[in-house]
Amino acid sequence: MTEAINQITIEELFNTHKEKLKLEWVAGREGIKHIIVPEESIPETSISRIENAVKKPGEPKKNKSAPSISKSLVGYLNLIHPHQIQILGNMEIYYLESLRSVSRQDALKRLFKNDPACIIIADGCEVPSILKRKCNEKSIPLLTSSFSSTKISDTLHYYLANLFSDVLTIHGVYMEVMATGVLITGPSGIGKSELALELISRGHRLISDDAPQFSRIQPDIINGTCPPTLRDFLEVRGLGIINVREIFGDSAIKKNKYLRLIIQLQPMDNEHLQDIDRLEGTYRARKVLDIDIPEITLPVAPGRNLAILVECATRNHLLRISGYNASEIFAKRQQKSIEKSNHG
Image (cartoon, rainbow, N blue to C red; front, side):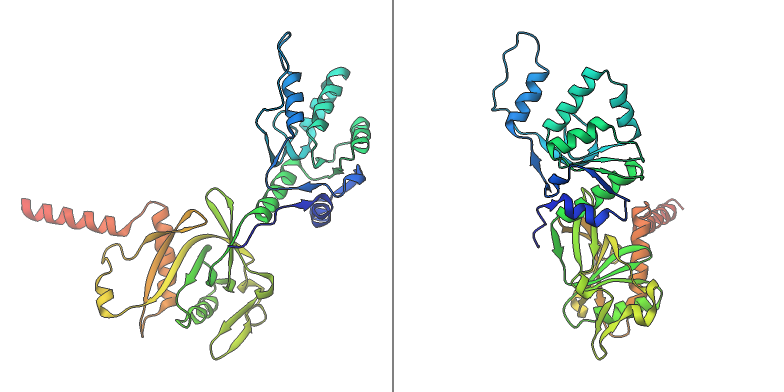
């Protein structure tokens, strides 16, 4: 497993997304080197200020030994549970403008005491002059966009979750089969690349050959991608390196896909074949980044059409997750037949 990137500057974030999200820099340029990190805590002094601001009359001030508050990556205006990137859309701007002057000053004071890495005004809203002035005073980057606050939040959250996640490289070929992310693994020389080539010729898509990279972007979602240096290429014994995009076209390549199924190619003799469950096959779970991913072992032997078997295994997996289990239906049907015979 490779280490995740542990920080990114506002300058890097802005340059990466300024075209995609139509970002413009309007204030706080001195904060261009502010950093965003996977987890950040509000300084204890800031925690004390928040607690003292809401204490009851006559109650003694809190000391500075309070536990730290975790800052999430991206979110809408929040003065209590701060985000590193604070997004203000139509609703947030309306809320601030609806406050009385004293209350608005207090809200902005608490916003800046939380030291956000940057503030983004979304929905094409006009930037309040007081906010622009405060951002210049505090050197907090202030960006604007005509895009919706939801679009900006979702895009940045997805980008940063991928950026900061641990990356696991697994030897194999990663394919999109039946619109499903399928990782094909097995011993070197067993025919993974040849199988991938046949699947591509049958209309499926290559994501990565040899060293696909996987990252956990949600509690139950693993995203699979291809290292930039390997993109589009497939090594086939006897042919060498081929460019799949140039031979089969853009439709034969997929940039990324969520991992849903692992297929292990395994040479087996007759003795091991006899050990396979005739009803359930070799369906089991394999942990990848602490998430259970279904894994199927396909015996490799002369005369077996592995491409058809992979397609069938994928179709059967999709049926299973939809609630249909062929082996259970078969067993129930046989049981009913036996009971009918006994009563007959």
